[in-house]
Length: 119
Image (cartoon, rainbow, N blue to C red; front, side, top):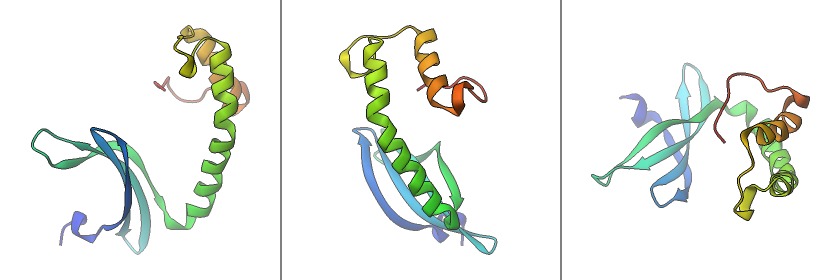
């Protein structure tokens, strides 16, 4: 039995017309992991997992849910900040320095960790 056959499908929702976000439970070495990943639709009609996703121990699910709730609460505030800079859903595009400043103030108390990411 290969690794894909041991995964237990939990659910999915459409991300856009070309991809879906799917959740699986994955048993591995006496532990069970939650895997949430983007699946891209290919020209042949099949869906294939993308490298973009997250996998973590199921014991962390309550903490992950709390984190997502915090993100949900912060999202409208951040949209307003980006809109004030001319970006967000209002059609403008803030320059990269201003957008990075907003993100830096939002995440990690003014410090951006790791390398630059595209948002």
